[in-house]
Image (cartoon, rainbow, N blue to C red; front, side, top):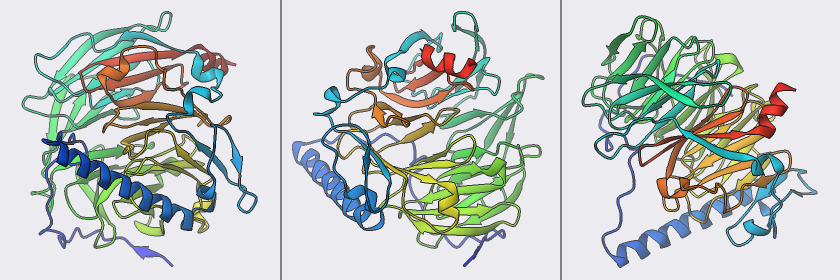
Amino acid sequence: MSYHADEKGNDEGEHFSISPGYMWNLVNEPNSNYEKKKRRAQAEKEKLLAAEHNKKVCPAMNLHANSLGTKTNNASSKTVATSNDNEATHAKVSPCLQQISRLVDARLERSGRNCCMSSVQFNKEGRLVLAAGSDGNVRLAQIDSENSNATRIHTVSLPNCDIRQAAFMPNGSEVIAVDSTKFIYSYDLMNNALSKAGPFPKWEDRRLCKFEVSPDSSTVALIGNNRGYILLISPKTKEKVGVLRMDDDSQARSVAYMDGGNQLLGTDGSGRVYLWDLRTRRCVHKTMTCLDNAPLCTSLDSSLFAVASCSGFVNMYDRSEFVSGGCEPVKVIDGLTSCTSVEQVKFNHDAQLLAMISRRGAHKLKLVHLPSCSISPETWPETDLKSRFPCSLDFSPISGLMAVGTLCGNAMLFRTQLLQKHASA
């Protein structure tokens, strides 16, 4: 069965409203021990419900690993990678994860006030890295290929803007950003020109908080504080070209492109994953994956995609199986601490590494080496990154470098020689 997408942009969810920038707002600290216990109990309950639900829809999750590694379910032949805090130190760690070392700080300057570095990204060639934060600045640094140092070359200031996300366009000559308002900002690197687009028709009262750019530069998908709608705009004209619609009771959480920009994946807060064919604007597949969904990401070749949940699980799916109607993950990863919401997931260029970030509770960054199903240990990285609370990350095009943004306003670079050798081989 196919589901038709709504391109008219009818405001059926106009009465529904949530706080602006909900996707990126930090959780307020509890004011009393009672509130802390209540929140902890609620998180435990949500995780138990998610686990019970996944046991029903994902047979692979019936397995419990006593140590980190690969387990195979005889019935489903699916691989499961799991970990917990007590066992992580005894787990086998891939050499790939052991050879990651801290380099320099790509931030190069610090804001006078607290700054959350909400976005870090390399350009397509890997010679530039951007770091954008809540202070309204988009910092551009050039990567030295010899010693992998970063030198700041320019800073784009957006006055009175709390930048939620910024990214290079695929051509590398333009940067776009959103700041949880009605507008999207565009900076032309070649002409040193800053422009602003919006508000968009029938989206005048909607705040934009997240976006994704198609690999072929055909569309930009934006998510706002509206119920179940995804706005499509043209990267060239910055005008509205379509609207994709989820179920009436849904709230769009995350989007990711597949098949070179011809398909779009989307998740809502009810555990559903949608797949649209952008050539026809039709929803070609929809399924329930887990109790709740947060971010998702796709591999560079679109063969895999990962969906994270607010209860700490990350499910990996094979695209061909998913399109044919399968809803069982090929891998299930529980790599963060209990009851920890995963806020970002990211594949490296060849899908051998999967990075996971939690911005709540423990504020952790974990790397999963998928071929060996091993997770970075609790002692990694051996720097003060944990005290700086990672909140965003990106891999360079050949995965020789990894950039990590923090809640303290830093953009840190990491290098792995093993990945560099593998990429250049």
